[in-house]
Image 1: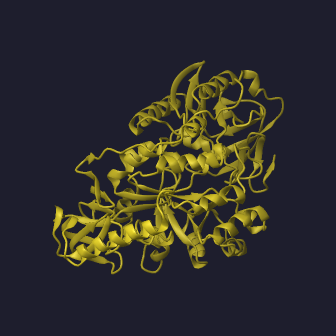
Image 2 (image 1 turned 180 degrees about the vertical axis):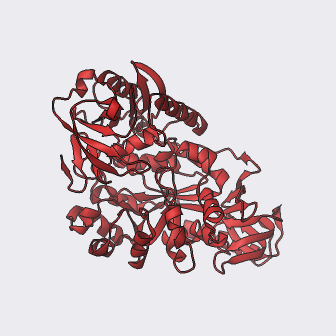
Image 3 (image 1 turned 135 degrees about the vertical axis):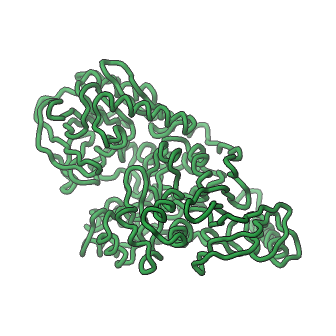
Length: 577
């Protein structure tokens, strides 16, 4: 509420807007926009309905026969509600939020629910503030779930530590929906007070709490759900999903870049189960956004490849997430709902021909309307662009004087195995040195271990995207190149580097918190694809994304072993090995 606008003034203004809406709805006044001859997806009757859709002040006034100041003929097209991504980390796009919005608008996306825990692990509440400011007023509405696990576990070293006191004030923000994925399911089950305080605080504000509990079952699942966690996006099998659904959890069917579960979970999209299912991407990288799409790509794949009923697929992408997140004016085409539309060519190909949000056409016939980049406070912008606090590294930084644990990679998965111990690099046996370098607090901590299955034959690869604390992670065949790759990232205030014999072969600059770039998505993607190619030339195995795969080797909540700034840990036991 503006300090210059009283409560009475706001009510009077909104009442006047309602009066205008009533005049259009009742046919006494022309609409601002009418979608004529529309065939639209009716999420209430599970069928295709027909009629003119009238819009006033960004709201659907009525459906029937209407005249408008602007009229668009929808003959031969199918109008669906604007698409909603139920769970995404915007940072995964590697670009600033405005660039992400430019990428998804041509795909019918109207709303995304984001968890800014990546940037929060770097900058704490300043990171959340940055994301809120950087998304204010964008055509795609960005709604927030507050990070629940910063850091992911006490064994991790992030740039901040957020308890419930720290995040509590954000519940007053209009675009905050609840508490994001509760990854510390062990803490929940064991009754950790700090964890349960966060859950209790979210309940106090009557907000949703999302889950993250891969493989959880039986009484442990009962305890997790009993705490008040409403959803899960980590299911990788029908058995797991059905058990969680049977306990009352909503299932977010994830089909992103890093993890793809639609194939395993498409069986949920049938009348018996689909009412409690929705789509999400979790992580969506530049190449995926540019060449495959967003939520529209999940709908297309569900229908074309897994023979899901098109209306069920569209409801999982619209009405269900809107209902789950209590966005009462979104996710449907009916009087009083926000005028968000994804206009498809048909219900077979699902090519988006037009995206309308709040009654404004943002994308049409391959043309995207200009988007204003939101202003961010100068001090905050400066802070997010300078997040590296460590000294230049040398080959001695990676000296190893004893045997270290070996992380065994699993092809096609982000889970790992305990592959024993090693004392030195052995390229013939695919044993490489890996290190995680603390970069937030100038501690000098460098965790060292070994990695098996990555395939690199020479040189080094480094990235400042290393889940979830986003320290620098580097893997290499020799200490000199590991130092050179890490130092390049420090020089660039974040990013990705591929090095061989001291030469930079490929790089991506990610100057926003070491996670995102100010550049256009196409430029970032070109740099990223070149860096991938260079890493492949150096030997990275086929089927492995050199950077995405590496970024998960430091995530201490995915079994079986990982590397943090203090060394190799057993994830299940949450202790160093």
